[in-house]
Length: 174
Image (cartoon, rainbow, N blue to C red; front, side, top):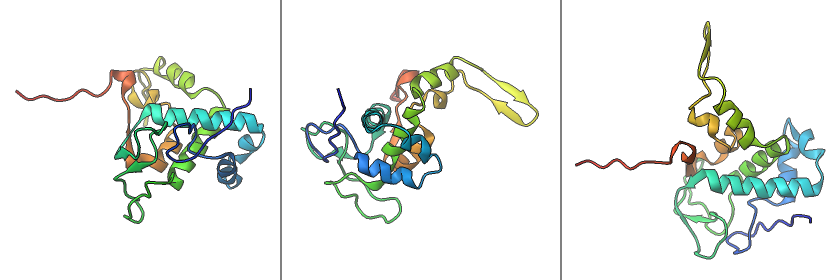
């Protein structure tokens, strides 16, 4: 069954932060755009839907949802554009989130990022050769499913969930 995207901001049936047309436009000017262009529309739609799920599952968004009935975390209230300082329109999906979704979707077409990062987390603990040093095991960033190239677009509005490490723990002083 083909995946049908619904990128309507605030909709109770929304399943995407980007439309296929928006993702295609993003990738037209991307150095790795050939990976995207070689996929079918259904593969692209599946990748966009999965990227959206991963952004919501692995990131904790600042602000507040605009509605109790919206199916996705966005649109949101109380956020500001990091470039202009203007309030983010609470009735739309910002361009930065569209770009993050398209970037994550393209990377998903190349393979399962969660499986790839799990392998890294189970791999090296440390390796040092001269000035080069690698550490994978028990490294929180190695377990991050959302790619840093996607996260950079939205890092102003969220933080990475640390569920793989047991989640955030509140500090209580007595």
